[in-house]
Image 1 (cartoon, rainbow, N blue to C red):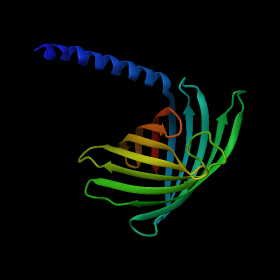
Image 2 (image 1 turned 90 degrees about the vertical axis):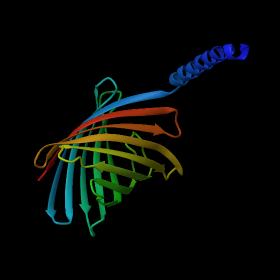
Image 3 (image 1 turned 30 degrees about the horizontal axis):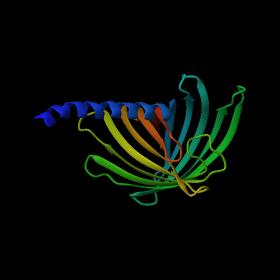
Length: 219
């Protein structure tokens, strides 16, 4: 009986120590926040070719304008399940002096996608010279797995994904990106997309939280 009476005290001690550990961990972990807004324009000049153009604005954790970018993308679908493509991105990063530092970024990618009833899983591998951060002179392989679900008689399409960023320059896993989003179809060829991304850095003790809202138009 005496040992039974000691159990609540031991449990309380464990909870207190766990709380202290979580608090210390939270103090050491750096969390960055970013918000983004974009418009994506898509056009198919040919049956197997699609062109995308996306202007985007990014804001820091104080909701102050931090970066702009323009991205162009060409996608070619040689067979039913496979797509290959390339993209070019022009970015302007705001410096501490208030000026903008311009950078040129590119990517080559291949993607496999197949509809399975209402699910559409996909696998994508990209070679890029950027990882979405302010890195320079680095080359990455990005491996992404995603799946979306077409809800019956609904304008909402949820999607989840996970992506690994492999830094080829350092030969190490740079970060993981976990994403969950929701696409809402307004009317024919027009939709709004809202998503949340968590960037988990493997070589640094920090995370980045990204909230995005975008508008998609297909011509």
